[in-house]
Image (cartoon, rainbow, N blue to C red; front, top):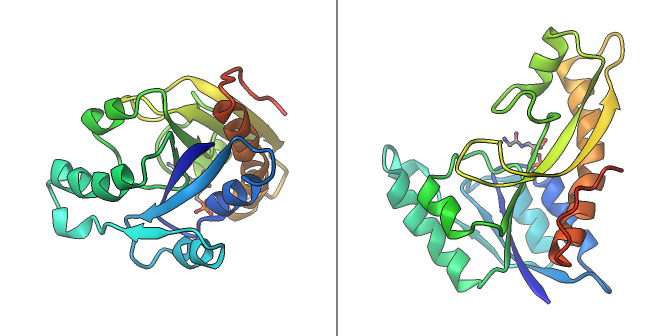
Length: 195
Ligand code: GAR
């Protein structure tokens, strides 16, 4: 059984989708949900599912990314993960941290990468007049939102869409895509998922 650690910063809806998927004949199980935000709503949701949680607040480490990551590594290493899933984890990780988990760390990003890496993806898709938007699961490499793509899902952009309506439509796809990619990845299959 592969051991999965999930990193979150917020509500954790992707984390919940991942955890719910890891049952039965799934080759992985969640062993820890870790947040940099003490108030992250996802922490209670993880606890409700019986999954161990930990918090490493980034605030005391302002300007000291290496110090923050050293602290973050403690609960991660103690959980002995085979796979790390970033699920709405909103801190940028240093190359040193990323390299340590090379080939074992996934992220979900709310755009059709390579379009719109970084923040405000939905606003940028709307401003560009795009006809479609979507989400991407990719392997994490030191370059931000640029690792090998493991799966994408598309949604139409409709007339009258706002950032909120588009985000909700994409998020529903995220909840399908990320579990599908993780299941394949945990089984050792890195062919992209295109539902
Ligand atoms: C998701 O839309 C995820 O793709 C995005 O944050 C949201 C987290 O929601 N991630 C990023 O923007 C990463 N740069 P959740 O906490 O409900 O899963």
